[in-house]
Length: 67
Image 1 (cartoon, rainbow, N blue to C red):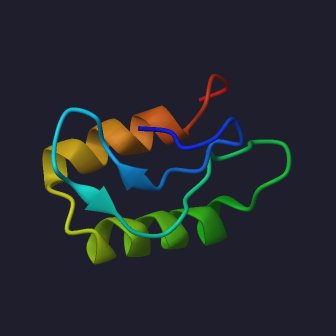
Image 2: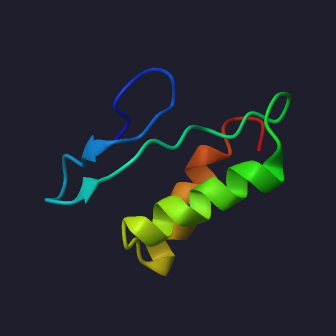
Image 3: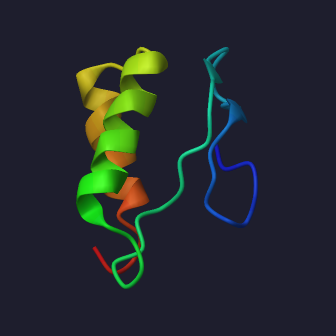
């Protein structure tokens, strides 16, 4: 699901025919503003029409190891 080592997600998921549009990176607790990041995440989810179950899984994944 990850396209690069930087934490950006884009392109296709190997297990499905879903194409995700736009980058979203892992939330970095030391450097990122959570309000800005969560707004970008919500827009990413909305634009890619991600269902509620997958949204929760993606959210937990993008919180990184510090979450």
